[in-house]
Image (cartoon, rainbow, N blue to C red; front, top):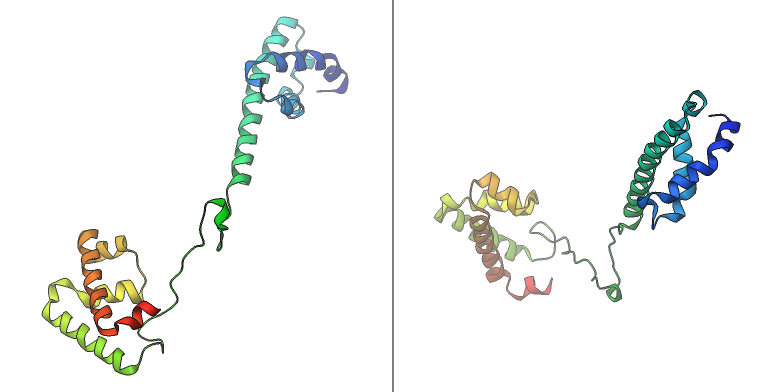
Length: 185
């Protein structure tokens, strides 16, 4: 649309924008809606001579532009208001610090070799006593491969409750062998 045509219809376009019910409450977007309307109108107003057709066409374009601009603003606001994941969130905001278990395992030098051997021995006994429970596979999936309960239950082809129960059995074994050493960590 050329500048002369734009100037000729500027008041009509602004009037139609401000009369639209969707514009109410979004007055701060007038410039953006107006610019969007001009882009959508293109050069079509230069070729139409009937004022009723022009008004009807502008009304449809304004309606579409208001919806588009409001949606764009909502998307931008929702993206900018999403909280960034934080490692430490201040308690005053209603959130607490994220908790992470320290990296501990049988292979780290946190426990004595004697305790590690005892655990491996007891784990072997448990594996031999209850082969159907697949404790070795369970141990590897959870503590070596660090898989979730859902993934473990899928791989073992058991319910999540059964997988959790077996994990508790392993945890009790570890707690029995390591006693207070585990609770200190």
